[in-house]
Image 1 (cartoon, rainbow, N blue to C red):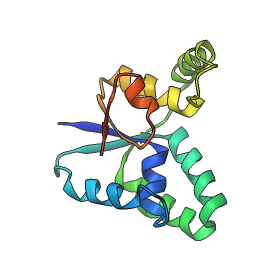
Image 2: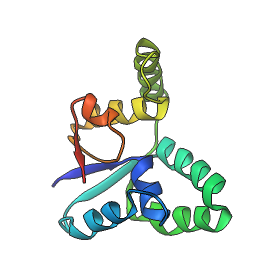
Image 3: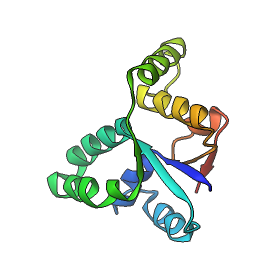
Image 4: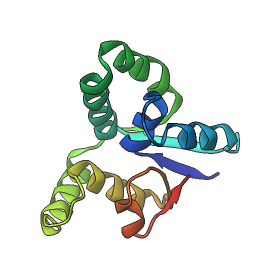
Amino acid sequence: MARTLVDTSAFVALVDEADASHARAVEWLATIDPGEILMAHNYVVVETAALLHRRLGPSATRDFLEDMVPQVSLLFVDERLHRAAVSAYLAAIRRRSSLVDWVSFEVMRELAVEQAFTFDRDFGRQGFETVP
């Protein structure tokens, strides 16, 4: 079964109709295989909720948390994973990738997830396939 990690940029694009990537995100999501497992980790959920609240307000944030998040397989970051991501982040601190991205990279490597639903080029730079 194929698995795809959903990044903050994809969640925001799906929710925010004014986002430049909204149409591409909605189109891609409509075409995925029914057996595809979409997954995210709790740091992505926290980051997305904060961005949506700031950009679109409480209603969009509530819709995201109540309607969209339950549709993905959610992984909770434990202390070991957090420490590994922080270490990788600090080693690459001069790059633009966020700590949340480094958590995603660690999750993807650990679980052998090769594809990310994202509009963030940093995933490609780390060797992952990105969609759309």
